[in-house]
Image 1 (tube, rainbow, N blue to C red):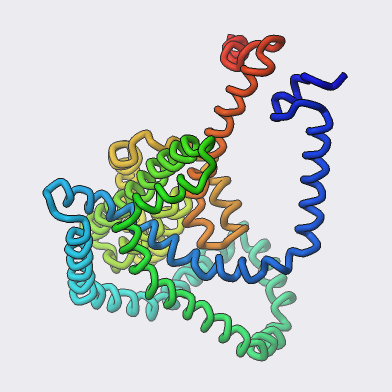
Image 2 (cartoon, one colour; image 1 turned 30 degrees about the horizontal axis):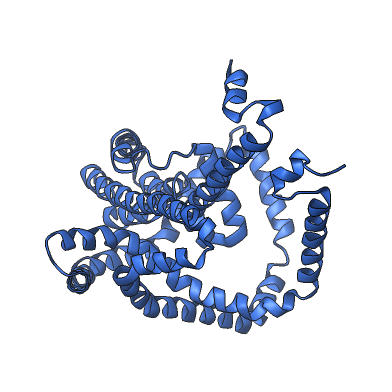
Length: 388
Protein backbone atom coordinates (compact mmCIF):
# COMPACT_ATOMS: atom_id res chain seq x y z
CA UNK A 1 0.00 0.00 0.00
CA UNK A 2 2.71 2.44 0.98
CA UNK A 3 5.28 1.29 -1.54
CA UNK A 4 6.48 3.71 -4.22
CA UNK A 5 5.06 6.64 -2.28
CA UNK A 6 6.34 9.86 -3.89
CA UNK A 7 7.06 11.62 -0.58
CA UNK A 8 8.97 8.63 0.76
CA UNK A 9 10.93 8.35 -2.49
CA UNK A 10 11.69 12.05 -2.24
CA UNK A 11 13.17 11.45 1.24
CA UNK A 12 15.30 8.59 -0.13
CA UNK A 13 13.42 5.52 1.03
CA UNK A 14 11.13 2.89 -0.48
CA UNK A 15 8.32 2.52 2.10
CA UNK A 16 6.58 4.68 4.69
CA UNK A 17 8.22 2.55 7.39
CA UNK A 18 11.55 4.03 6.31
CA UNK A 19 10.32 7.57 7.02
CA UNK A 20 8.87 6.56 10.40
CA UNK A 21 12.10 4.83 11.44
CA UNK A 22 14.15 7.87 10.44
CA UNK A 23 11.86 10.18 12.46
CA UNK A 24 12.03 7.89 15.52
CA UNK A 25 15.82 7.62 15.32
CA UNK A 26 16.19 11.41 15.10
CA UNK A 27 13.95 11.81 18.17
CA UNK A 28 15.93 9.20 20.13
CA UNK A 29 19.20 10.88 19.11
CA UNK A 30 17.98 14.26 20.39
CA UNK A 31 16.84 12.75 23.72
CA UNK A 32 20.12 10.86 24.22
CA UNK A 33 22.20 13.93 23.39
CA UNK A 34 20.19 16.00 25.89
CA UNK A 35 20.84 13.45 28.64
CA UNK A 36 24.56 12.94 28.01
CA UNK A 37 25.51 16.42 26.84
CA UNK A 38 28.06 16.68 29.70
CA UNK A 39 30.20 14.11 27.87
CA UNK A 40 30.85 16.67 25.13
CA UNK A 41 32.09 19.38 27.54
CA UNK A 42 35.81 18.53 27.02
CA UNK A 43 35.33 18.63 23.26
CA UNK A 44 33.62 22.03 23.53
CA UNK A 45 36.53 23.35 25.63
CA UNK A 46 39.02 22.04 23.07
CA UNK A 47 37.00 23.62 20.26
CA UNK A 48 36.95 26.99 22.03
CA UNK A 49 40.70 26.77 22.62
CA UNK A 50 41.67 26.11 19.00
CA UNK A 51 38.95 28.19 17.33
CA UNK A 52 40.63 31.54 18.09
CA UNK A 53 43.98 30.85 16.37
CA UNK A 54 42.21 29.10 13.48
CA UNK A 55 39.79 31.99 12.86
CA UNK A 56 42.54 34.63 13.02
CA UNK A 57 44.77 32.44 10.86
CA UNK A 58 42.07 32.11 8.20
CA UNK A 59 41.49 35.88 8.19
CA UNK A 60 45.16 36.55 7.48
CA UNK A 61 45.27 33.60 5.08
CA UNK A 62 42.64 35.22 2.84
CA UNK A 63 44.60 38.49 3.00
CA UNK A 64 48.02 37.05 2.21
CA UNK A 65 47.28 34.04 0.00
CA UNK A 66 46.75 36.16 -3.17
CA UNK A 67 50.16 37.76 -2.59
CA UNK A 68 51.83 34.36 -2.19
CA UNK A 69 50.13 33.13 -5.37
CA UNK A 70 51.39 36.24 -7.18
CA UNK A 71 54.95 35.55 -6.01
CA UNK A 72 54.63 31.99 -7.35
CA UNK A 73 53.85 33.43 -10.79
CA UNK A 74 57.22 35.18 -10.63
CA UNK A 75 58.84 31.73 -10.13
CA UNK A 76 59.43 32.20 -6.42
CA UNK A 77 58.88 28.94 -4.56
CA UNK A 78 55.88 29.01 -2.25
CA UNK A 79 57.91 28.38 0.91
CA UNK A 80 60.36 31.20 0.14
CA UNK A 81 57.49 33.47 -0.89
CA UNK A 82 55.82 32.91 2.48
CA UNK A 83 59.05 33.60 4.35
CA UNK A 84 59.69 36.75 2.28
CA UNK A 85 56.13 37.98 2.88
CA UNK A 86 56.38 37.37 6.63
CA UNK A 87 59.67 39.29 6.78
CA UNK A 88 58.11 42.21 4.90
CA UNK A 89 55.10 42.24 7.24
CA UNK A 90 57.34 42.13 10.32
CA UNK A 91 59.35 45.04 8.92
CA UNK A 92 56.19 47.06 8.27
CA UNK A 93 54.90 46.33 11.75
CA UNK A 94 58.18 47.44 13.29
CA UNK A 95 58.06 50.64 11.26
CA UNK A 96 54.45 51.32 12.25
CA UNK A 97 55.18 50.63 15.92
CA UNK A 98 58.23 52.86 15.82
CA UNK A 99 56.75 55.80 13.93
CA UNK A 100 52.97 55.82 14.14
CA UNK A 101 52.09 54.11 17.44
CA UNK A 102 53.85 56.73 19.65
CA UNK A 103 51.90 59.51 17.91
CA UNK A 104 48.61 57.63 18.30
CA UNK A 105 49.45 56.87 21.93
CA UNK A 106 50.21 60.54 22.63
CA UNK A 107 46.93 61.70 21.08
CA UNK A 108 44.97 58.91 22.79
CA UNK A 109 46.34 59.77 26.25
CA UNK A 110 45.65 63.46 25.74
CA UNK A 111 42.14 62.67 24.51
CA UNK A 112 41.42 60.44 27.54
CA UNK A 113 42.68 63.14 29.90
CA UNK A 114 40.58 65.83 28.25
CA UNK A 115 37.45 63.73 27.75
CA UNK A 116 35.93 64.50 31.21
CA UNK A 117 36.28 68.22 30.54
CA UNK A 118 34.53 67.76 27.18
CA UNK A 119 31.63 65.98 28.88
CA UNK A 120 31.48 68.66 31.57
CA UNK A 121 31.43 71.37 28.94
CA UNK A 122 28.60 69.66 27.07
CA UNK A 123 26.66 69.17 30.31
CA UNK A 124 26.97 72.84 31.22
CA UNK A 125 25.90 73.88 27.73
CA UNK A 126 22.90 71.54 27.92
CA UNK A 127 21.91 72.96 31.33
CA UNK A 128 22.14 76.51 29.99
CA UNK A 129 20.00 75.53 27.01
CA UNK A 130 17.29 73.82 29.06
CA UNK A 131 17.15 76.41 31.84
CA UNK A 132 14.06 78.66 31.53
CA UNK A 133 12.85 76.68 28.51
CA UNK A 134 9.96 74.33 27.88
CA UNK A 135 12.30 71.38 28.59
CA UNK A 136 12.99 72.43 32.18
CA UNK A 137 10.08 70.46 33.82
CA UNK A 138 11.09 67.30 31.97
CA UNK A 139 14.74 67.71 32.97
CA UNK A 140 13.66 68.13 36.60
CA UNK A 141 11.73 64.86 36.39
CA UNK A 142 14.78 63.09 34.97
CA UNK A 143 17.02 64.47 37.74
CA UNK A 144 14.47 63.37 40.37
CA UNK A 145 14.36 59.87 38.88
CA UNK A 146 18.15 59.66 38.89
CA UNK A 147 18.37 60.77 42.53
CA UNK A 148 15.78 58.18 43.58
CA UNK A 149 17.30 55.28 41.66
CA UNK A 150 20.94 56.08 42.35
CA UNK A 151 20.53 56.62 46.10
CA UNK A 152 21.99 53.18 46.80
CA UNK A 153 25.02 53.70 44.59
CA UNK A 154 27.35 53.33 47.57
CA UNK A 155 25.99 49.85 48.26
CA UNK A 156 26.33 48.97 44.57
CA UNK A 157 29.93 50.15 44.59
CA UNK A 158 30.64 48.05 47.70
CA UNK A 159 29.13 44.96 46.08
CA UNK A 160 31.16 45.58 42.95
CA UNK A 161 34.41 45.90 44.92
CA UNK A 162 33.63 42.70 46.83
CA UNK A 163 33.35 40.86 43.51
CA UNK A 164 36.50 42.46 42.13
CA UNK A 165 38.79 39.41 42.66
CA UNK A 166 36.54 37.22 40.50
CA UNK A 167 36.28 39.97 37.88
CA UNK A 168 40.07 40.37 37.93
CA UNK A 169 40.44 36.64 37.37
CA UNK A 170 38.03 36.83 34.43
CA UNK A 171 40.03 39.72 32.94
CA UNK A 172 43.27 37.78 33.46
CA UNK A 173 41.79 34.72 31.73
CA UNK A 174 40.73 36.89 28.80
CA UNK A 175 44.20 38.41 28.50
CA UNK A 176 45.75 34.93 28.60
CA UNK A 177 43.40 33.76 25.85
CA UNK A 178 44.34 36.75 23.70
CA UNK A 179 48.04 36.10 24.31
CA UNK A 180 47.63 32.43 23.32
CA UNK A 181 45.84 33.43 20.11
CA UNK A 182 48.55 35.98 19.23
CA UNK A 183 51.30 33.48 19.96
CA UNK A 184 49.84 30.52 18.06
CA UNK A 185 48.03 31.95 15.04
CA UNK A 186 51.28 32.70 13.09
CA UNK A 187 52.02 28.96 13.04
CA UNK A 188 48.47 28.24 11.86
CA UNK A 189 48.85 30.91 9.19
CA UNK A 190 52.18 29.54 7.99
CA UNK A 191 50.82 26.03 7.44
CA UNK A 192 47.61 27.33 5.87
CA UNK A 193 49.65 29.31 3.35
CA UNK A 194 52.02 26.41 2.75
CA UNK A 195 49.60 23.44 2.68
CA UNK A 196 46.16 25.01 2.21
CA UNK A 197 45.42 23.08 -0.98
CA UNK A 198 46.56 19.82 0.61
CA UNK A 199 44.20 20.36 3.55
CA UNK A 200 41.31 20.94 1.13
CA UNK A 201 42.05 17.83 -0.94
CA UNK A 202 42.41 15.76 2.23
CA UNK A 203 39.06 16.99 3.54
CA UNK A 204 37.34 16.18 0.25
CA UNK A 205 38.85 12.67 0.24
CA UNK A 206 37.32 12.07 3.68
CA UNK A 207 33.87 12.43 2.13
CA UNK A 208 32.08 9.46 0.54
CA UNK A 209 32.67 9.43 -3.24
CA UNK A 210 29.04 10.37 -3.83
CA UNK A 211 29.43 13.70 -1.99
CA UNK A 212 32.96 14.71 -3.02
CA UNK A 213 31.85 16.89 -5.91
CA UNK A 214 29.32 18.64 -3.68
CA UNK A 215 31.99 19.22 -1.02
CA UNK A 216 34.35 20.60 -3.66
CA UNK A 217 31.70 23.00 -5.02
CA UNK A 218 30.73 24.23 -1.54
CA UNK A 219 34.36 24.85 -0.55
CA UNK A 220 35.01 26.73 -3.79
CA UNK A 221 31.99 29.00 -3.28
CA UNK A 222 32.86 29.57 0.39
CA UNK A 223 36.42 30.43 -0.55
CA UNK A 224 35.26 33.06 -3.04
CA UNK A 225 32.58 34.56 -0.77
CA UNK A 226 34.57 34.74 2.47
CA UNK A 227 37.85 35.68 0.80
CA UNK A 228 36.35 38.51 -1.21
CA UNK A 229 34.53 39.87 1.83
CA UNK A 230 37.55 39.84 4.17
CA UNK A 231 39.92 41.32 1.60
CA UNK A 232 37.43 43.90 0.38
CA UNK A 233 36.20 45.00 3.81
CA UNK A 234 39.70 45.58 5.17
CA UNK A 235 40.70 47.58 2.09
CA UNK A 236 37.50 49.64 2.36
CA UNK A 237 38.19 50.27 6.07
CA UNK A 238 41.73 51.43 5.27
CA UNK A 239 40.43 53.80 2.58
CA UNK A 240 37.85 55.23 5.00
CA UNK A 241 40.53 55.82 7.63
CA UNK A 242 42.82 57.61 5.16
CA UNK A 243 40.01 59.78 3.74
CA UNK A 244 38.77 60.75 7.20
CA UNK A 245 42.29 61.63 8.35
CA UNK A 246 42.68 63.90 5.34
CA UNK A 247 39.26 65.46 5.95
CA UNK A 248 39.79 65.93 9.69
CA UNK A 249 43.19 67.52 9.02
CA UNK A 250 41.70 69.94 6.48
CA UNK A 251 38.99 71.17 8.87
CA UNK A 252 41.48 71.36 11.75
CA UNK A 253 39.75 68.82 14.03
CA UNK A 254 41.77 67.80 17.08
CA UNK A 255 43.00 64.22 17.40
CA UNK A 256 42.58 63.64 13.67
CA UNK A 257 44.86 60.59 13.61
CA UNK A 258 43.28 58.79 16.57
CA UNK A 259 39.73 59.53 15.36
CA UNK A 260 40.53 58.31 11.85
CA UNK A 261 42.13 55.17 13.30
CA UNK A 262 39.01 54.46 15.36
CA UNK A 263 36.88 54.90 12.22
CA UNK A 264 39.11 52.55 10.21
CA UNK A 265 38.92 49.82 12.88
CA UNK A 266 35.18 50.07 13.51
CA UNK A 267 34.38 50.22 9.78
CA UNK A 268 35.22 46.51 9.61
CA UNK A 269 31.67 46.08 10.95
CA UNK A 270 29.34 47.47 8.25
CA UNK A 271 26.63 50.03 9.11
CA UNK A 272 27.06 49.80 12.89
CA UNK A 273 30.79 50.55 12.84
CA UNK A 274 30.58 54.04 11.26
CA UNK A 275 27.87 55.01 13.76
CA UNK A 276 30.22 54.14 16.63
CA UNK A 277 33.18 55.88 14.98
CA UNK A 278 31.46 59.25 14.51
CA UNK A 279 30.46 59.62 18.20
CA UNK A 280 33.80 60.84 19.68
CA UNK A 281 34.33 63.14 16.68
CA UNK A 282 30.90 64.74 17.29
CA UNK A 283 31.76 65.39 20.96
CA UNK A 284 35.05 67.09 20.07
CA UNK A 285 33.42 69.15 17.31
CA UNK A 286 30.61 70.27 19.66
CA UNK A 287 33.11 71.41 22.26
CA UNK A 288 34.99 73.39 19.63
CA UNK A 289 32.12 75.23 17.92
CA UNK A 290 28.89 74.62 15.98
CA UNK A 291 30.73 75.60 12.81
CA UNK A 292 33.26 72.79 13.41
CA UNK A 293 30.34 70.39 13.80
CA UNK A 294 29.00 71.57 10.43
CA UNK A 295 32.40 71.01 8.80
CA UNK A 296 32.57 67.56 10.40
CA UNK A 297 29.16 66.70 8.92
CA UNK A 298 30.35 67.78 5.47
CA UNK A 299 33.51 65.62 5.75
CA UNK A 300 31.57 62.60 7.01
CA UNK A 301 28.91 62.84 4.31
CA UNK A 302 31.58 63.23 1.61
CA UNK A 303 33.51 60.18 2.84
CA UNK A 304 30.36 58.07 3.13
CA UNK A 305 29.33 59.13 -0.38
CA UNK A 306 32.71 58.15 -1.82
CA UNK A 307 32.66 54.85 0.08
CA UNK A 308 29.14 53.95 -0.97
CA UNK A 309 29.33 54.98 -4.64
CA UNK A 310 32.97 54.42 -5.65
CA UNK A 311 35.09 52.52 -3.11
CA UNK A 312 32.85 49.62 -2.05
CA UNK A 313 31.32 48.93 -5.50
CA UNK A 314 34.76 48.72 -7.10
CA UNK A 315 36.55 46.84 -4.32
CA UNK A 316 33.81 44.55 -3.00
CA UNK A 317 32.30 43.95 -6.43
CA UNK A 318 29.18 41.84 -6.75
CA UNK A 319 30.48 38.64 -5.22
CA UNK A 320 28.51 39.08 -1.99
CA UNK A 321 25.27 40.96 -2.48
CA UNK A 322 23.47 41.20 0.88
CA UNK A 323 20.58 43.54 1.57
CA UNK A 324 21.44 46.21 4.20
CA UNK A 325 18.45 45.19 6.34
CA UNK A 326 19.69 41.59 6.35
CA UNK A 327 23.15 42.77 7.47
CA UNK A 328 21.67 44.78 10.35
CA UNK A 329 19.56 41.84 11.56
CA UNK A 330 22.52 39.45 11.27
CA UNK A 331 24.76 41.82 13.26
CA UNK A 332 22.17 42.32 16.00
CA UNK A 333 21.56 38.58 16.40
CA UNK A 334 25.27 37.76 16.35
CA UNK A 335 25.97 40.48 18.92
CA UNK A 336 23.42 38.99 21.32
CA UNK A 337 24.74 35.47 20.77
CA UNK A 338 28.51 36.03 20.87
CA UNK A 339 29.21 39.67 21.75
CA UNK A 340 31.80 41.71 19.89
CA UNK A 341 33.40 38.59 18.39
CA UNK A 342 30.04 37.60 16.95
CA UNK A 343 29.57 41.04 15.41
CA UNK A 344 32.98 40.87 13.71
CA UNK A 345 32.48 37.33 12.37
CA UNK A 346 28.74 37.65 11.63
CA UNK A 347 28.91 38.48 7.93
CA UNK A 348 31.53 35.83 6.97
CA UNK A 349 29.57 33.23 8.96
CA UNK A 350 26.37 34.31 7.22
CA UNK A 351 28.14 33.97 3.86
CA UNK A 352 29.22 30.40 4.70
CA UNK A 353 25.73 29.44 5.85
CA UNK A 354 24.18 31.00 2.75
CA UNK A 355 26.51 29.03 0.46
CA UNK A 356 25.63 25.74 2.17
CA UNK A 357 21.89 26.46 2.25
CA UNK A 358 21.87 27.61 -1.40
CA UNK A 359 23.68 24.45 -2.48
CA UNK A 360 21.30 22.23 -0.52
CA UNK A 361 18.34 24.12 -1.97
CA UNK A 362 19.60 23.46 -5.49
CA UNK A 363 19.81 19.76 -4.62
CA UNK A 364 16.30 19.97 -3.19
CA UNK A 365 14.98 21.46 -6.42
CA UNK A 366 16.63 18.73 -8.47
CA UNK A 367 15.18 16.03 -6.24
CA UNK A 368 11.76 17.71 -6.32
CA UNK A 369 11.74 17.86 -10.11
CA UNK A 370 12.77 14.20 -10.26
CA UNK A 371 10.09 12.80 -7.96
CA UNK A 372 7.20 15.31 -7.78
CA UNK A 373 7.26 17.32 -11.01
CA UNK A 374 4.65 15.13 -12.73
CA UNK A 375 1.78 16.54 -10.66
CA UNK A 376 3.08 19.94 -9.55
CA UNK A 377 5.33 21.00 -12.40
CA UNK A 378 9.01 21.83 -12.05
CA UNK A 379 10.30 24.50 -9.69
CA UNK A 380 11.32 26.74 -12.59
CA UNK A 381 7.92 26.64 -14.25
CA UNK A 382 6.19 27.19 -10.92
CA UNK A 383 8.38 30.25 -10.23
CA UNK A 384 7.60 31.69 -13.63
CA UNK A 385 3.84 31.26 -13.04
CA UNK A 386 4.15 33.08 -9.71
CA UNK A 387 6.03 35.97 -11.31
CA UNK A 388 3.41 36.31 -13.99
